[in-house]
Image (cartoon, rainbow, N blue to C red; front, side, top):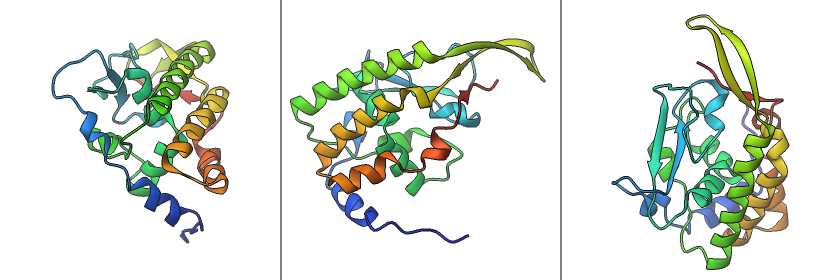
Length: 196
């Protein structure tokens, strides 16, 4: 398979790596600032929330932060910038805490952090507003109620998050456009379904 090299990625990487990893925000104790994510489980793990999904799956994990609010962390990890970083560095099959905490974001201004907080709250509300609850027939559990997320309806908010991050990193308009449209067909499929 031939890998297509984009002329903007080297510049984006240089700017991205001027930041320290968000490992600096990680808390080793339980805090109110947390995100929930799934380490595996089909496409569902791409959904980051600030509360448990309710599926009871063992692949759901929590990550705790200090000096970074849940909505800000959700915004960072739900961004197309994170998706670009993740797909450039990792296998695309799993999401582990070292992958999350390897993301680069540091020295955010109070204005940037305030915008991330607002966008994160808007994104979380959008996730729930567009989610659909369906009954599916699971091979292992029979009929189960399942929440399905329609991420593409939240894409305008994700784009706003990436605009804030572009200002933070100093991305050009062309670099921002690259990030916003990065892997869009795969990432913004018709819907992201939970899997038992």
